[in-house]
Length: 115
Length: 114
Image (spheres, chains in turn cyan, blue):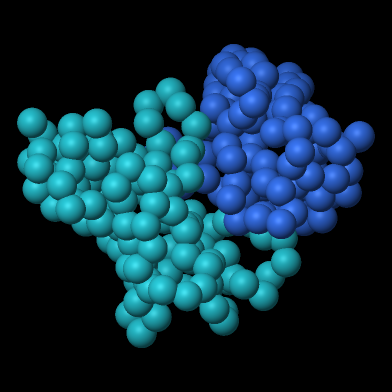
């Protein structure tokens, strides 16, 4: 069975500073990896995905993530955080071989960007 | 608005009552998923449909839960004899076959069982 770990419940960063949200995963075989963001009173919004190819993937709102197979990690990054990036971020995984496919989510990391 | 819609947005019910939620996916999406999210946790998969066929159900989906997608369009999730532990946000998502991994989520239905 697949699993996702987001080791930090909350990340605090000053506006303009780099933002990193950590994610490690466990899956049988090769993974599809995703980041979603959840704003208060709104549904989850898709940010970016890793399917295959370049390990560095770029997504919406200036976010990017790096797939590291040896470390089974998929950390989310943004070079310069905005106050509006304050939200709840979820990492998710699905095994490529499992037709379907349901997503398995981590517990989420709350990001607070202070002005 | 062409996104995923869910109805109702909030539901308060007494323990033992039945509740039904509706999800309307994006019109051209033939895959539909239900997830449950409790406070402080990530969403957990419940079940998914490809067109009208229910192809997978989680162990979380007890006998009191049933989901349907009769015409391959909207879906309903019914919980019978609700328990306080059923209190959660119920999320619906849809995706196209060609890009099943890009799941678009609705705003959710928040259920409170008193």
